[in-house]
Structures are given as C-alpha cells and as structure tokens.
Length: 112
Image 1: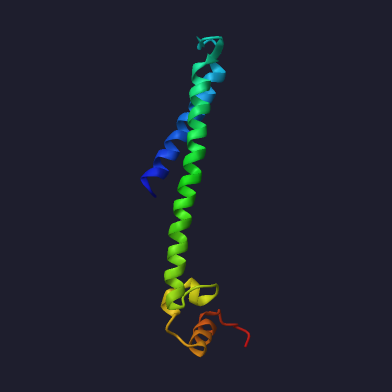
Image 2: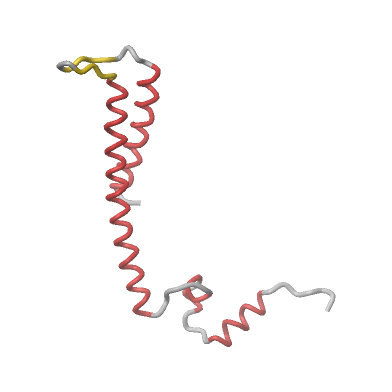
C-alpha cells in the first residue's frame, strides 16, 4: 500500500467523522461574508472531495504499475488465465505434465 493510499484512507475517515459530527451539532456554524456554514460539515465535504481526488490518483498509479507488471509477464509468456497464470511454477512444464499434475490432484473415486 502506498503512502498516498494511506492519506486517502485518512481523509475518508476524517470526512466520515466530520459529516456525522456536522449533522449532530448543527449549532457549530460560522459566518463568512454572507455565507453561514456548519464547520464540521464543511470540513467533511472538503476532505471527502480530497479523498475522491486521491482515489483517482492512486487508481491511476496502481493501474500504471499493473500495466508494467503485465508487460513484464508478457515478455516471458506468463500471462492469461489457467494453470500457467495461476501458478508461475507451472510455466516451465509442458502441457502433458500439467494435465498429469491436474489429474493426480483430483480426489479418487472410492467405488472404482
């Protein structure tokens, strides 16, 4: 988990607490110019929007990392689905060996 993702989680927790506090304490208001605002609610909305921005940013960075990892796996032929993708140890095995390994791992029928 990146440091940025930890900040995102912190902002989400602060936003949730502030929004709940703002609903519970409607008398915590301040007037700025002609605008009257509930302080905890305003802090909650601000941190919630900041968390949303951080969600997009961390999602982008994680996507970049996954694309780079996928490219690296594609270079060695270890992409896709199935036993080769599920277990990198099976990459070097041929098809016959993988089928035999799969057949050996099946439960035995006691009636046969």
